[in-house]
Image (cartoon, rainbow, N blue to C red; front, side, top):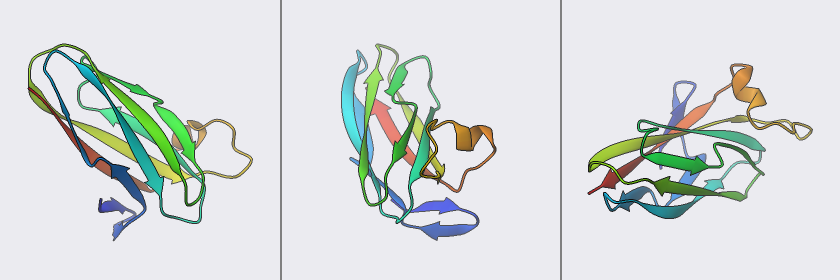
Length: 118
């Protein structure tokens, strides 16, 4: 996944699988977010469809050169294409609240994941 942040393109986070497909009557999928950097990162997940999707966790940490798991639940609803935005920011080793960097206005990049239900 090519991502952008700070006006540049870098390979920082990789999402596996890179797209999701759900039945219109719902379902669950598990994704892995890989951190290819030497920095600890905080992440935040946003979606274009908060009515039909639930994400766990919405905020989290990914240690350097590590991965975090993400669960996406689709509730029954009309078939359509939606997007998930996985945003990230640097996180200090002593940071315990993954939402803190975003509340402070930090964001260095974003990965867009497409999802199709139908």
